[in-house]
Amino acid sequence: MALVGKRVAFGRPFCYNENDGYVLSERGMVMGRNVMVTGTGRPYALGFNMVLRYLEAGDRVVATVRKESADLEKLKEQYGDQLIILTMDIGSSDSVNKAAEKLAGEIDHLDLLINNAVTVSPDCDKEFFDANLDYIARAIDVAAVGPMRVIKAFYPLLKKSDDVSLIINVSSEAGSISKCYRRNMIDYGMSKAALNMATMNLVNTFKKERKINIFCIHPGWIRTNGRDDNPAPLSSYEAAGILQGLFDKKWKDFDGPRFITNDGNAYPF
Figure 1 (tube, rainbow, N blue to C red):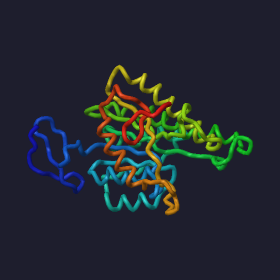
Figure 2: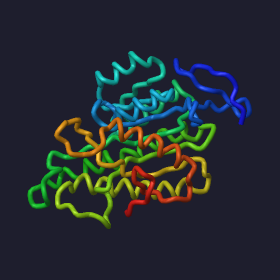
Figure 3: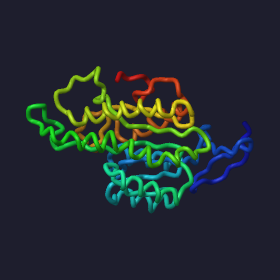
Figure 4: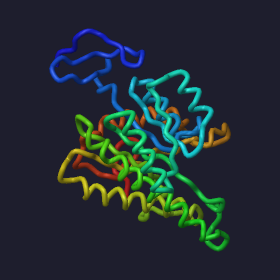
């Protein structure tokens, strides 16, 4: 594979492969991809830091938010047209469909979709007898049905990728039914278990064409609230870097486990 010369994508150097036109970084990974991440408005959380990692890698990034984010706007000032900020509510099919129509007027394909957006109820930390169970349906609608809305609406752009496109559903060990040990986090655990089921349904839906690959992932224990007293070992930026490398490794792995940890190992459903 011959690499010729150096060029610049979005102000950053890359190499060009004269044989098949792929844009490659100096470490040999495909660059210049169109990446979309949902749930990106908070600078201390995973979604924002996934956006930052892919921007730093030279990819064009679509960052979706439910409401405006001053921190994303600052990134926009720095990265310009490399960053597209898209407003949508994944709890509404109408909102998601309109966002997909808008994006189709700005880019012609998507290579990577990271479904990261989530919600939890005010009673997430409460146990069964104290929790308001009426909150659960909303959590599942956003965290499990929401990614399916996004995948359905943006499927035409994913299909237009020149290569295999990848969908990552950010799940959690809390969504494992077989390893459940908690008495709290009922809404969160149920929504992530539902997301895992949705992922497997879509594995079956897409398996014959081998054009779209999909995983659900436990991203690790992360300081997603940004607090210094959080005992989690990983910052969101560190976790985003680990996941970025993992996604490249798993991009065309159609036959391995579907629910995986941030080191690529299978996690039980």
